[in-house]
Image (cartoon, rainbow, N blue to C red; front, side):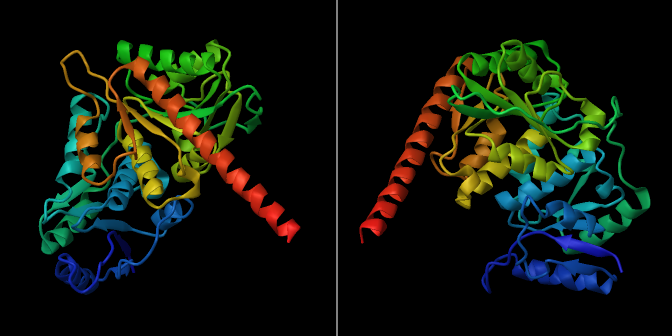
Length: 373
């Protein structure tokens, strides 16, 4: 029988979406679907999310959108964008009867207006306003198939592990999340300048190791300035974007989730430059890790570059508005000018190093006390 995966967590007997979820479960069962996560108690991690995608035939997102739900939805959209074979022919429906998904949709619409997202998200993430409409959309999507993402391969999947250690005189490394498709000259100039600034200030530059767009410009700027430059990528995205020259370290991974995990693991700070759905996905992952107090994100600063374009629009305004209702002060800082990014990164990294030193001192003191006893 076909398997469908539900999103969302049931928050108890008084959960306002409980009745809607129960109605949806009944309709799906009656139509012959087996259901994963019917009780809303399954946890998704970066390490297992691709497995969950492979074992499912369709996806339904429920009302009461959370950061975790939005991360899963944007991950599926990114999978469609990057021609992930494991998503081929698998419809995705969002039950938005409470309008909680509207801010998320506004982010994607804004990015499409700015040219950072080429696809119309409404063709891939099918929004409906009733449980009955979920069934209708599933049937329609099955008959029509997956929309064309209008992406084409430009390279062969390649890339072997490169592992040159970060220089001892570096103060740390910053991961730059950004677009691999935006080609507007001023954005590319900012990306190249960012890579150069990191190299000149003894900060390693970690990226998604794409050759094109702002991502390629960031790598170029760091490499040309003699910086330590690392990254991770996956075979089906390498086929679309290619690999940049000059990487000091390269960590190949089988999927975009373990790719994110290794980049987060090796980074001490994060810089969010203009980007598309993939950059939104990465930023949501950082925020979720912060809220979970995940060791990989403990004390690490996140700087969002909310640059203004020629039309006076700030790139990340809708996303910052969305996060403002779900995050707390200190989860991220916003820079309006390129020159404001480095001081914010350096300040955050100094606090991180101080925290690490304090933690180490505590461990040494505890060990000394144990020996003395």
